[in-house]
Image (cartoon, rainbow, N blue to C red; front, side, top):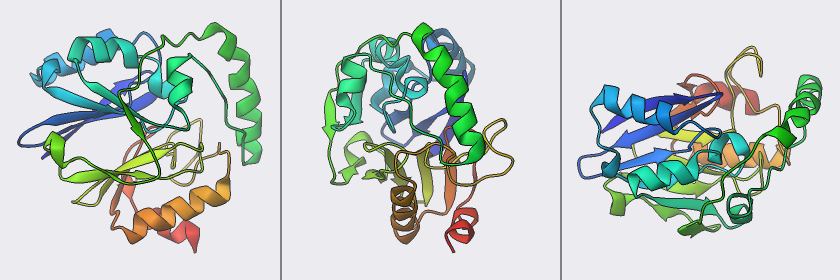
Length: 224
């Protein structure tokens, strides 16, 4: 199995290629399909091999290019039922800051929201509060509900212990100085509970949507 990071604007998406299939995790902000296709071309990957697009949550910087990437790949889109409407109706909710810097940055980012347009897309697979196996797509792993950053946040946990967590963790300036919990969240206590679940399920390496991967032990120490 191979993992390919795909940098699309301010977000880091991930391609996971198994022996019998490939999935994409998140789609970045709007107008990033050319950058996406350029990465695939560089990796000599066929867009049609992607059968599933898993959106870790419905914020604009994760779903903005979902419809165009869906169109060029033919893949199905999976999103939690709590946030299905965000993509299908082009909504742009902003989570509150949970740190001092997070609250300041949330106000700054809110100023730009009126100028951001998310092309609407139909959600093909509506996730709920149960795990969703990825074996049908040739990937040894599952989608796990991990609410906290947003009420419909999910993570992809592979059998290898690789955890793709969206914004359940962050590791990049100007969001944070070091890897750790998110600075934006609807419910920070839920974030902590979701992390306890992921760690208990065997998460070993964290792949955030903002920043580089880091060991899950970093989060384990934060929770102590």
